[in-house]
Amino acid sequence: MGMTLLELKTVAKELGMPAFTGGQMAKWLYTQHITSIDEMTNLSKANREKLKAAYTIGCKKHIDAQYSKDGTIKYLFPTDDGKFVESVYIPDDDRATLCVSSQVGCKMNCLFCQTGKQGFEGNLSATDILNQIYSLPEREKLTNIVFMGQGEPMDNYDNVLRTTRIMTADYAYAWSPKRITVSSIGVKNKLKRFLEESDCHVAISMHSPIPAERAEIMPAERGMSIADIVELLRNYDFSHQRRLSFEYIVFKGVNDSEHHAKEIIKLLKGLDCRINLIRFHTIPNVPLHGVDDKKMEEFRNYLTQHGVFTTIRASRGQDIFAACGLLSTAKKIADERA
Ligand code: SF4
Image (cartoon, rainbow, N blue to C red):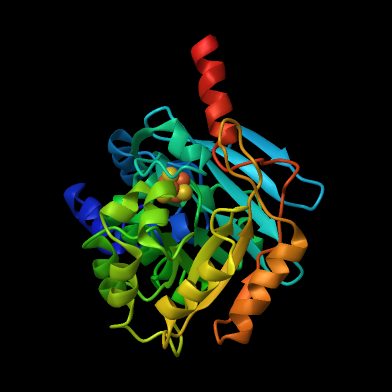
């Protein structure tokens, strides 16, 4: 699991099987979601034994789950190298979204993020990223995937791209790229590559339109500024199938003034995009606070009235995640204490 059709065909050939066996394997994996090679019943017993001697399926069940009263479920999945990552399943009226992680921890150290505090522990392989979907109990109900879990997707570019390709390939999940959104804070060279090489939706974490202030809460601003990100985005067409959005967590007294709204309007002028305002829920040891509903609405209304289409993201699963990253951090601490 996590291999492309071409790679599965190569595996078949290397093990002395006809290349079309690779296609059969792809079907067993991505259509049937088998958990053991023995289930590949249209392969001869001898071929299954050969395959088993060299490979495993690579899927892993979650080891923990937290259930919100609003239906949101947060899962903790083990990785190939003994670490843990979180995925959040968010059902809604007519859609069900899975928020997947791309790294264990994160290098980017955003001030408001629990995962950033965890430090960086490693990239997830495509198998580990895909396993969050493959092994999800609600997999069949999924309508959308968002790469907004732990980690910066562009910092694990190859594995994220590989996963989205398998998700959209005819031999695998055959999803439309419109069902997948990859979020980024903007990583030099990688964001450009992603815009060129993928058709998935893009969500940029802005959180402040003012470079010096953004750098205070997101050190990655110094590597690729929000101004450079927007300039890059202007070269691509987001008026048709592909959608561009900006994520904006509203922090009390930090990025919620009319001045900030004006700067956003100036920055995004002429760009086909929307802004999603996100409520901030306090996390331990972080001197930032969220704003009340009235302030959120005023900020949204100001932006919308000035031509920037803006929505307020509904808070989901608030009772189970004070912040993304808490479940895996708790697991790590528990393991260290054991
Ligand atoms: S917000 Fe995203 S990019 Fe920033 S530290 Fe957290 S996981 Fe990393």
